[in-house]
Length: 67
Image (cartoon, rainbow, N blue to C red; front, side):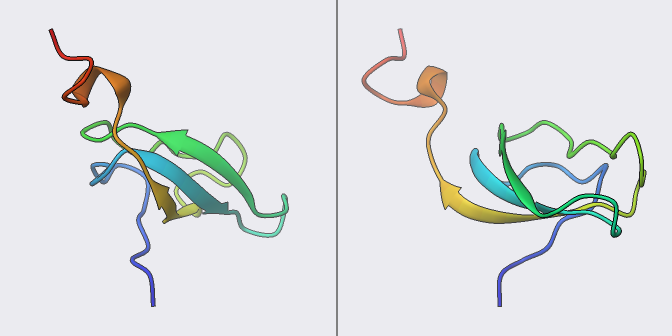
């Protein structure tokens, strides 16, 4: 079972997250950046949930691009 995150929690890893709303929208995916907070939904507020689908390094944090 994958970890589920709530708005206000810190994004643990940059990547693509599955997003699940409270019945007003179908599940979809968004990109989140490590260290930023997961945002609330404009419609269902803090009822939205996030689950990591694909982890990826943010380009600014990747060893080949740091400078």
